[in-house]
Image 1 (tube, rainbow, N blue to C red):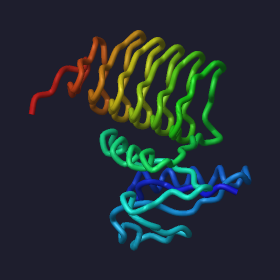
Image 2 (image 1 turned 60 degrees about the vertical axis):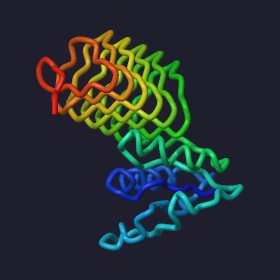
Image 3 (image 1 turned 45 degrees about the vertical axis):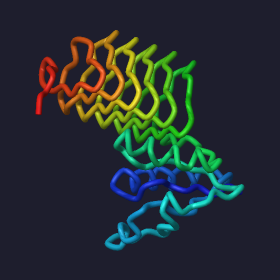
Length: 211
């Protein structure tokens, strides 16, 4: 029997926990062991069956451990996942049973897909990608490592999304779109053209935002 550890016990980490609980009820190849988080008191105001076991920095993976990351911010997710990978940790995927998955999907590792998302045929999902509830991913879409797609996003067919991209709720990416590494698409935005590396865009149509 394997033991599942969730990296991060914040809001998204707790969502990942409940996905894991639902999957655990359908399979017997792993059990939830607990959370890894630097904030030892972060669950104090909640009632959870499983505790904070350790910080990521202090935890040493054991032979039967599996890991999944519940951190929604791409650069922080990469930072903590790489710490576990450097110690030889092994990651699994968590996919909610309600997700609609078409044929010929290429999967990475460390992927989280929340309830009622839909992924169409011949798409490619990179390592440590998270796709939140009710998001729609079209055919032939490519999503790079550590990207986070929030709820109700629509990604048109043949779109190419780079690494460490954040797409906020209700964003729409037109078919054959392109979003380069480390870009951010604001909530409710409609992307009609290429989004360059490290750009933050917002609006209808989505335009660069300057701070």
